[in-house]
Length: 296
Image (cartoon, rainbow, N blue to C red):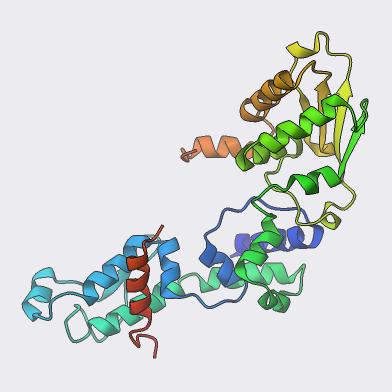
C-alpha cells in the first residue's frame, strides 16, 4: 500500500504546484479518487466482457437443466484472475439465485480496489485537503492532476519569451503558424521534446513563472542543415535561423517524432511492448442491470 500512498503524494504535489503528471487512468478510477460512487456501467471502462457475461447469465433460460449443464460456480474472477467465492450458502449459480449472484458479483468488482483508492487518497491528504475533492468531478480532478489533454496554443503563447529574435519576426510567426497546424498529438510530442512532459498546466498561474523560451542562434551554418535543440529543465527551444517556414516545419516535426531520448517513459513502453466504445443498446442493457433492484 505504500506505493499507492506515494502515488497519492505525487498527485497532491501535482495539484499543489501545477506540475501535471502523465497518468493514463480509466475514468472510473478518477471517479473513485474524487469520492464518487461507481455504477455498473463504469465497469465497461475496465472490463467490458465482465458486464456482458453478467447480462448473459441474467438472460439465460429458466430451465434448471441449462444451469446444471453449465455448472457455473457461484464465484467471480478478480482483476488478477483469481476465483473469488461470493457466498458460503451457494456453490453453483441456479435460476433462483442468479439475481443474487449478479448483485454480489457487481458489488465485489465495484469495490475491489477500495483499499488501494483509500491509500491513494491518504497520500493526497498529506499535501492537499482531501475532503475538498468531493467538490470536483472526476474530469476536473483529472485536469488538476494531469493538465488538459488538449494543448491550447494561446496559453503557451502567453508564457513565451524570445532570445536572439524579435517576437514580430518572420521566424517567430512561422513557428506559431507551424504549431497551429500541428495536431493535438503533435503538440503533445512538442511539449515532451521541449519540457519532458505531455500536457500544459491548466492556467497561467500554474506555470509558476516558468516561461517557454524560444532562442534563435546564428552559430548553426548553414541553418537549414541543423535540427532544433531542447533543454527540458529550462523549457527552452534553441533553433537555427531557418530560411523558410517549410524548412522550420520539416526540422521541428523530425525532432519531436524521432528525438525522444529525454523521455524515459518511451523506454518503458518499448520494454513492456505497449502498442503505440460502447453501443447505445449495450449501454441500455448495462443500466438495466443496475436498475434491477440488485443494490436494494
